[in-house]
Image 1 (cartoon, rainbow, N blue to C red):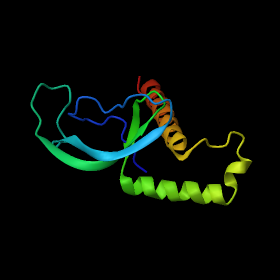
Image 2: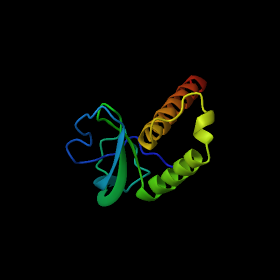
Image 3: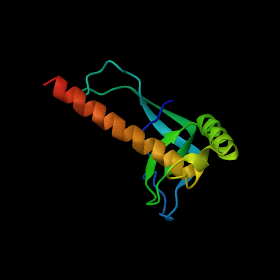
Image 4: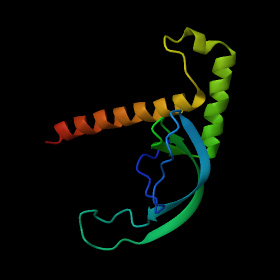
Length: 128
């Protein structure tokens, strides 16, 4: 599963007005793609850039901040799995039952960010 935490988006602000609830919205976003993957990021040379408009599901926290994005297809797969687990009673056996599908999506992004940060810090310590 691919989560994009650092979306480069020329739109002014991907966040929404806070509602106090977890939400996900599917909309078209304009992404910037750096086409030269071998370019050194610290060098001051210009890199070829392309733009693409894609449909993305933006997952928002209660604070209205975009926690991450995923494809509508992936959103649909996760939603079906969530509903199946709920209908078969799997959520009853969890110590903190899920509040909603949207809150579970936010939880996925939070856990992914935490794991990535932990992995990066371990690599940093190993490469010192």
